[in-house]
Length: 151
Image (tube, rainbow, N blue to C red; front, side, top):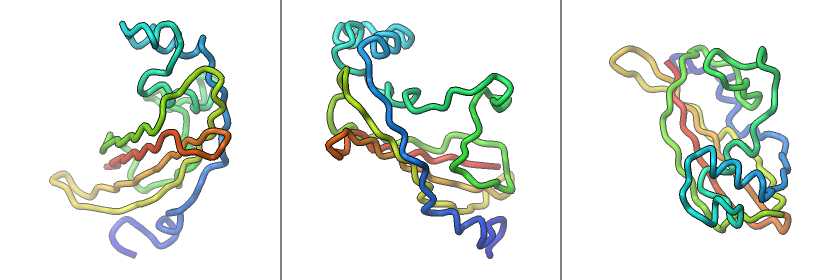
């Protein structure tokens, strides 16, 4: 055990979510393009999904009283951390092929790392989650790595 990270907490590294399967519709692509202010015809017509379309596709739909104060649903993949104030630490997205209407996509999230650093204001906990999105043939469509910082 080092600092804030117990062996029990570190044992969560490698924890994986249940796969989540969703269909991509032309209407959802169009709604996303309009909501994000896109001016690109192929997105507005729903022919291909714009970047970041995949993010809300796999979000849980929950009642308002189930949201955290910042408007996000509780991430059931994550353990209870000793620090709770979250900040963005980084986002890497590899788009391996375009997403089209009619695509069935399956997302699986894995907690890949938890580590601690000491900052000017005290200890910080970093965690990384990798989301792999595959098509029905098992081909990787998107790989996303999110890093969050807790203080």
